[in-house]
Image (cartoon, rainbow, N blue to C red; front, side, top):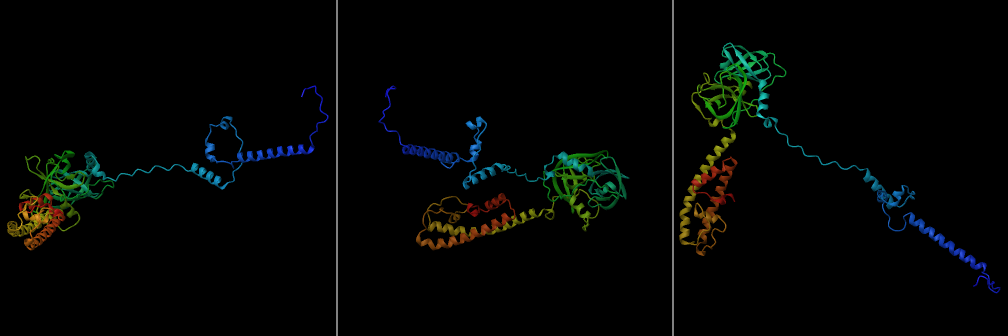
Length: 435
């Protein structure tokens, strides 16, 4: 309509009723929009993100702005459970790493260097000063010293000079000339006196490392020499340890020690002008004397006459079992060999009359094939089955007896090489004995 046109006097003006309807519609729209906005802002519509995840994201616009409006508290049980779980895990410290297992304890004496073993033993070794000269000795208890009879001779008291130069008197408590062992007692023992533990010569092996401590020439106190066990000998009823560790005059009465610092002998004798041929009386004799066991020594003094290797009486229990087992095995194999000799002709008859097929494998005695699976691939003829069944029964009994003998030898500690040699010498070797 043109701007200068006059209003139509005939046009109808809007009624008040239609205006009210419009206002009502606008109000409904505004209320609905408010409800939707409230639902979205409180998280009741759409997937809900965990509070912890929202808090952890610090890169959004709200973080840049540095301020955010506090949210309305979420009263859902699921949301409260999630928040509690997140809060609990945040407070839980990380579990500590599993502890590293400690290594098994090791005997310090076995793991120590030789010089450490020597340094522990030295304070227990003393110089023994008697009216006839000097020698060596060593403390085995705080108030007890071992030495040789030929060091103290007939004296009733001697003087002991320690490593630090201090001296202490000692009385000769007992003598055993047959073993060349003298026991000295100190009336005022030191509280901190070092002592040397006692071992045994029964377990010694040729080649085992040993060392001695003594006062060489009676002047060089605490001299150390090193060597090996050359052998264990007998002089009558006396056990001697032969060693190539140097033993000079003045070393007599000192300890012969193994690699752990345990006394295994008392240095006592040697051949003049023979290097590397020295002897120590076994510490076992001293142990018997100290423990008060009744010992009947041989008459006279200890000498190197009639030296020999130890008899069966001085061998270890395992050695005796092994030797007894070897002898028992020999007897059992001799009997089995005689039984095998009796079966040999029967087998030859069987082979000549019943079974000419080749035998698979090689055996000391061919009839061992009946004890080996698949050694006889061809069937036995029907007219020979009774004979073969009887022969196999004898072979099975032979096998059971053999296995029993070999098991007893194994338990006795008979060496596998000795068992093999015993079987081969009697033509009884067969791999099936181990099955």
